[in-house]
Length: 499
Image 1 (cartoon, rainbow, N blue to C red):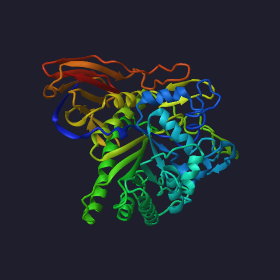
Image 2: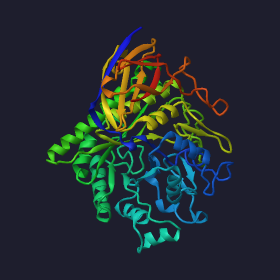
Image 3: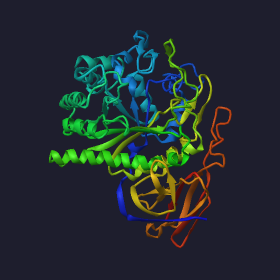
Image 4: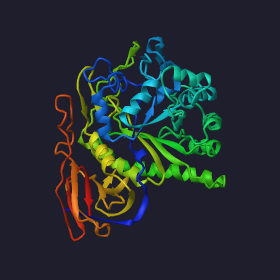
């Protein structure tokens, strides 16, 4: 059996675990909101119409922050449509997803939902069809304590200040599909103007400038450079978006997707640092990886085409994830944690129904997709400091990334001496025996060991079989400061150890 050896030391840290790494994304797209997190009349609905079964799963998932309301949707959104009495809210055409938006769920509801879910709101601003003044109006309504027209309006709606600190300055503005698509120069200017004005009200906001909508964009790199030359002094983050799929049947490259994420993050931070050097700035711009997931462009489950009809909450890209997808998601989380020194925010897109870890049916059940499990386990176990892990592993050949390590891993270590190790076997050929030298961590017991794996790499969960893919106990051995575990082909594993 092939073997891999890993070494770690609590003295060699990368950065503290950032709880915002475990964010998700709620967009007015398909059934993410309507019949996803919100469904008045459902058997579990609370007084606000929020599905309590989805709230429970959101808390189990370990979500820390939720980006809202888009996504492409935000570039045509009028925030004021979603506040105040519901009976007075207008119905609008949503050009982004060719649907009708009822505005029954809006800003006021989102903030109440966040409070119940125990998550931090991350608010996106429309810089597609709108601009500086509309952003300031939204900020005044959401955050100002009172005594002005819009803050008093919020109070009339029965709400205290929302205290939103994390804001996205638009969404994917380099994409020709985006409503109000702009050049880098156009976007950089309006983003800087908006950021500067918002800071006149609240200097301590944390703002995200739009990076390229993917690293495959023709303008990737030059877009980030131009935008940051305008916004560097006014923002904390530049965004990254990446989706990975196995549409071409190249499973080896798909399992190596985290290699692409690693390179993407390194490229964007290098560009940001180059702009910082130009400006002779002492400040670092970090990354908000506020859209990432597996997404199959050619087999999205139960997707309604736009046709000629404008519908309310039609099904959109409801991918049915399998165990291989779950292993890739777990590996992408390893990449994000490994870059905790520069990735300050990350959002799995999206939370419910739309390429999501949580699925629901109207009037019916909610269940966990296989991708739910590595996210929930990593969010629960990762704590303290992210550690450097030195890996000596067999390699596998991929068409997209060349030869890559078959075993990838990251670890965390907290003040109580608890060590968590997250590992993935990206090989399809067979098991690999992994030995992890944990002697310097002072751990003596295995508290928990869980594995996501199935002999059927296409195994999925469904409403009828919600637990077909679930984490299982992993067989691990700890002796003489060495942790030994056999990783099956295409598997993700988490091990928690204590003193």
